[in-house]
Length: 73
Image 1: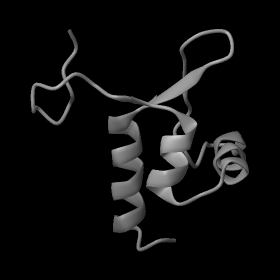
Image 2: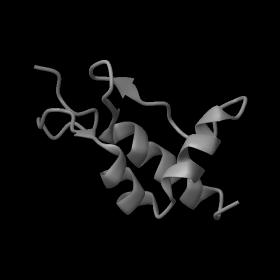
Image 3: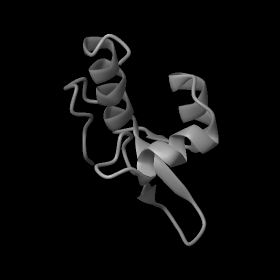
Image 4: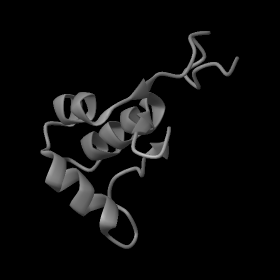
């Protein structure tokens, strides 16, 4: 079992889009627009199945921390 990079021995959480919207305070279209930029301004999702995607919680946490360090710019 892969553990969370934070070192707390918990398995990595996979987040769906509705959770991402709640966590980062952006709408779905804003998130997808940011992912389409070159280079991407938001982490790209992992494919779970033909129609389902998710994001590793560690990638979203890192993105949030980068935004905080950048002062929201």
